[in-house]
Length: 151
Ligand code: HEC
Image 1 (cartoon, rainbow, N blue to C red):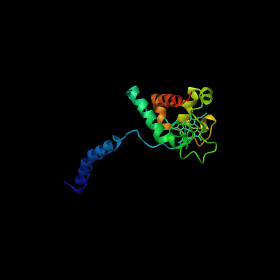
Image 2: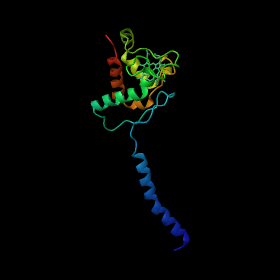
Image 3: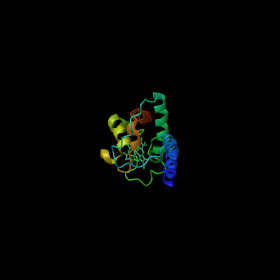
Image 4: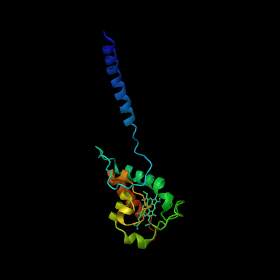
């Protein structure tokens, strides 16, 4: 056996281990990445083979609201989150019945996914491109915003 054959056969021996390491790294997607302000409106997440049950979407929407939106929009959507102070225009009050009546579900769904700049609102409103592959979570977020309405 020459040195060349030895080297080659040891390379082949390593390949399955490398593949295994790659598979491990890919298997660790939890779907809970932090949001980044999106400039590219159409970043499509690959379609999932099976849709998660509805109740998961509601829980995920609530979690998204609490972890991403509250910073600016406040815990009850009043526009009083800790990061709202420096924003011009400031986040509006989602509780206001007049505002609730003025905006369509489609508008809410679009601004959540693609951000303010994409729909003629403030560019400081970030998009959430990771949600474009999760229409049921977007719908649950829209419902969440509707539920903030005060009488
Ligand atoms: C960096 C601060 C910030 C974050 C984070 C943020 N927003 Fe906004 N949002 C704004 C600002 C500023 C506006 C524009 C002013 C306004 O319309 O209230 C806005 C606008 C909106 C509007 C549209 C209001 C309208 O009349 O068109 C909706 C709906 C909205 N945000 C929902 C959300 C949701 C849901 C999240 C979380 C997924 C979120 N926002 C995260 C700052 C933020």
